[in-house]
Length: 358
Ligand SMILES: Cc1cc2nc3c(=O)[nH]c(=O)nc-3n(C[C@H](O)[C@H](O)[C@H](O)COP(=O)(O)OP(=O)(O)OC[C@H]3O[C@@H](n4cnc5c(N)ncnc54)[C@H](O)[C@@H]3O)c2cc1C
Image: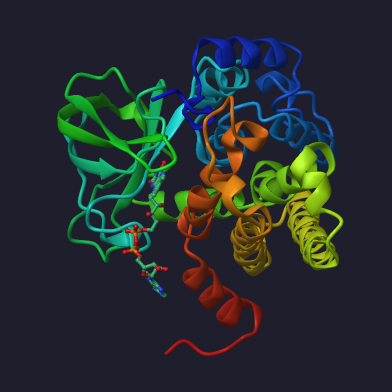
C-alpha cells in the first residue's frame, strides 16, 4: 500500500522546518523574547498559524497553544528556560499523555500512578491513543499522585523524556492510514523537576491548558479543510467543473460557505478573549461543537456531490491526492478528540446558559 499523506508527521524535514521558522521567532510569536518569541500580538501569531495550517505543514501546534502556555503558567523558571526555546525550535515536542484504557472523557478516573520517594517519582501505568508518542521527545503526562484524594484532586502533570528507561511505545493503526499509540510505563523513574506546577494540582493546570488547546488557527483550518478541498475540486478539476454547474450543488456549497464563516467567527471570538487574558470556557466549547460538526457535514456533502470519485484515495489517481475519503473518516475524530461534543454541550448549558447541574 502506498504511503498516504495522512502518514506525514514530525519527521526530520518537519523538524528542520520548525527549526528554521523558530529561529526567526515566528512560531511562538506572541511569547516573551526571553523564551524565543517576539512579544507580538496574538492575532499576528494566529495569522501565521493559519497560513502554516492552510499550507498543510504537519506541525504539532498543540505544543505551542497547549503545552507551552501550561509551562508558562505553572512551570518553574528553570523549566521555562529549558523547554520554551526548545519547543520553538522543534527540539522538544510533546505527545499528550491523558487518555487511558479506563476512559478519555472521564480523565479524573485515570489509574497511572506516580509515587514520590527521596529521589523523585516512580511511574507505573498505561496511556492509550497517545498520538505522535513515537516521534516526540517528551510526553506531557497526567498521573495520579494521591490515590486517597477525591479523584480530580490527586492528579499531577509530568514532563517526561520519552527515552526514559521503562517506557514502551506500541503502535495502534487508524483507518485513514495514520498512527497513534499505546504507551506503557514500568517502574519509570523520573527526577522531581519533571513535575509541572504543584503536586496534586495537575487537574487544574491540565484542564485550563486543554481548554486553550480546543481553540485556535490549526483547529479552524482542520474544520474547514474538507470544504476548501471541495471548492478546489469544483473549480479546478474537469469533472468538478461540470458538477459545479448544478444548482443543487451550488445551493449546498453556498450553505457550507455560510457555516464556514460561522466557524471562523467562533474562533475569532475565542481568540479575542484569550488575547484579553481570559480562558473562555463555554465560548471555546461552542466553537468545539460547531467546528467539528461542520467538518462532518462538509465531508458528507463532498461525498454526495462527488459520488464514486469520492471513493478514490490513491495519491496519483484520486482528486486532490486522495484527501476526500481520508477526511471523511477522520472528521469524526474532531467531534471527540480534546473533549467530546456531548460534553461541550453540557459546558455550554451549565456555564454559558446557567442551567442547573443534576
Ligand atoms: C485518532 C485518535 C487520536 C487521539 N489522540 C490522543 C492523544 O494524543 N492523547 C490523548 O490523551 N488522547 C487521545 N485520543 C483519545 C481521545 O481524546 C478520546 O478518545 C476521547 O477523549 C474520548 O474518550 P473515550 O474514547 O474513552 O470515550 P468515552 O469517554 O468513553 O466516551 C464515549 C461516548 O460517551 C460520551 N460521554 C462520555 N462522558 C459523557 C458525559 N459526561 N456526558 C455526555 N456524554 C458523555 C462521549 O461523548 C462519547 O460519545 C485520541 C483518540 C483517537 C481516536
